Length: 350
Image (cartoon, rainbow, N blue to C red; front, side, top):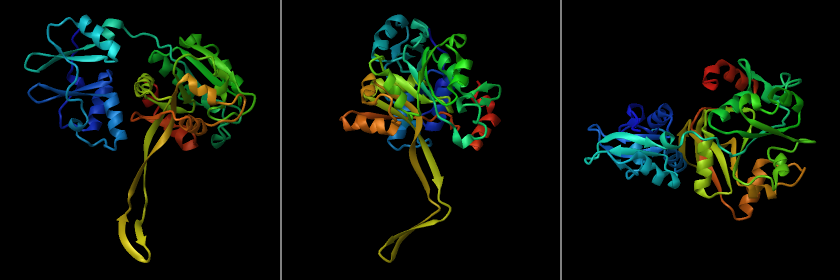
């Protein structure tokens, strides 16, 4: 089936920011870079953009510097089923269709031939924290059960996972965990299979994972249950598998401006002055993908946070990858964050 492509197409001069908007609008995890005469110049996938951001390119970089100039294509008239049967095993999900002159005419996509299948990848939601910074709201209600509009944070997360095809969810609970269990139950009413990891004491952001050692056979997602994001978790899994890492850490750019002129001094001599410089750093987004092997490094029923686990993985000589998250994201750790989420309900409940 040939797709209508106007909302997926951008000019080579479009910025990375513009291209992300096109990818979001097209909902195919790809944008097509097309010249003014209609000739296909290249493609830019979600993964291409994330790798470019890791290389230090910015949202204002022209997409021509990021795109794949030699994408897999199909000549018009070729059988779409045959094309996608060859491409899907190579993890290629969309193939532009062109004529002999290279003019873009359409696109074959895997969804036309295999449908949207359920995903077996397990997702672990860490929901055992006390939420002390949100006290007194969390005195009798665990933080994941605080409401955005009429819906608890954790239910918003679960509905998002369901919409992306995930079905198997484990929730780690401790503080007021029964409140969460009473609301979510086994998840059947959400179309999910939900089970629980019970912490007898606070075990940190990774400690509860020790209960899963030997019980999982495929890579899985771990996510804090106090954050909202429109990140596509399927992309996290694909990225993790493609890089061959034992762990993948979701990261976001955090920037802040120093409100003063920064003076660089050598001895007693002023070398330079930077007026109110802007500093950018990558910070953890509270989203991870792990191979089952990593569970062997988590001590049973002992406190372990996620940075410690990632350090252990690296100490074993294994790879830890970074997955840049450019989508909307909000960590609800403070009252201001909660108010922000409640004042922008439509952003999270779409």
